[in-house]
Amino acid sequence: MKNLDNLARAILQGNDKGAYTIPTSGLYPYQWNWDSVLAAWGFATFDIDRAWTELETLFQSQWASGMVPHIIFHEDDPGYFPGPQVWGTGQTPPTSGISQPPVAATIAAKVWGMDPDAGRERIAKLFPKMLAWHRWYHEVRCMHGPATITHPWESGRDNCPDWDIGMAGVDGSKVAPYERRDTGHVDPEMRPKKEEYDKYVAILEFGRDVGWDDRKIMEEGPFLMADPAMTFILLRADKDLLAMAEKLGEDTAEIQGWIDDLTAAVPSLWNDDLGSYDASDIRSGAWANNISSGAFLYTYAGIDNPAMDKRTLDAWDAVTYGIPSADPKAERFDPQRYWRGPSWPFMNGLIAIGLQDAGRDLLAERLRRETAELIRKGGFYEYFDPTNGSPCGGSDFTWTAAVWLAWAG
Ligand code: 9WN
Image (cartoon, rainbow, N blue to C red; front, top):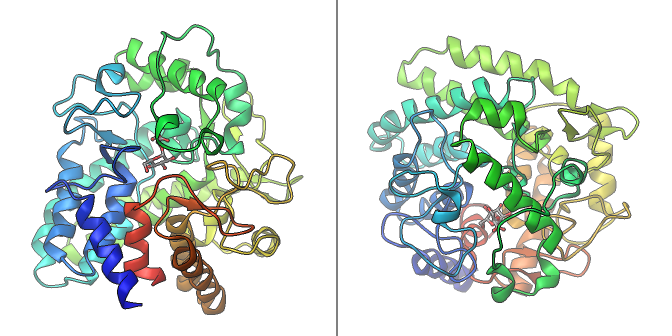
């Protein structure tokens, strides 16, 4: 589809700020972590140098702890809340104080595969930075076994029903007055609700008040949940990092140790009553009791689980376009509200990588076809209603254009 290829390239170029890409203008005017990595995958199909630059810019904002923040505020923009002053992390350039799912090693490995010779020098410089980020994840966020998140925004799946039980315990009534900006850019019915935003801000204020101290956030923070998606994405990225270390002649023992530990923690994510991988509240031990796109990423991590295969197909067969972000048979399913049901092209792309690697070519092709159809009919939107294909959220979206070029188109 030549015209759509051209359009996708134009979207990436339009959102390109020189050395980093924004997800879409207006709604998201800064550099976001996993959006940026996916942008690199798209750029790699037509401008390999620009792809490497995208990854390099992201890692320039890595914290001394190894954490790579979820937003980098290169230039101030009043169109997004919460901006750099609210986060108050004291970094230069300013950043948020939490991370996002580490898709970087996996996508960097793909970009290297598209640039095997000249790319060696670029990947060799990125390798120690990715290693330090993974070390931070394992030592800090995985201290309870599986990967945890300290804020729904850290999961990248903000208002997914996975987080409802954790959010129930957060007091959002005392936050400083603020004005949302997102609902001025897109239909408020498609965005998280006000009570959720109050709680997002309350969790942020806790982190800022303790000076973004990892130990205090993990031990005393208002929100701490085990995240299947974060666990599967990290495990997959660890495996890609290990393969990279082997090719670069780097030591592999530490990475192998992480893989062993995280693999051993995966069964702790299995909710037997639900018959699915599930999120849980670390402090209370309660299950989220929700089947979501987080659970559907198990194949991406190289995990074989026939019971989960069935769960995934049940959810997928219940809709028409791609894999929904939350169980379509559950009462909480909301097909147009962000992470409570919609189909996300880049998420479908990650799941398809897993299906392909597991040799399930027919399923991978079905997912590609359904995702391509969404984009062909609706355009390069942020996400889509999986029941009727309606486009939702922001338009001209970077990661949708990127996965079109790299996979769906
Ligand atoms: C908060 C940029 C980001 C994505 C996330 C998505 C959404 C932000 C928001 O947009 O989150 O980080 O303000 O809603 O949930 O996955 O990285 O596209």
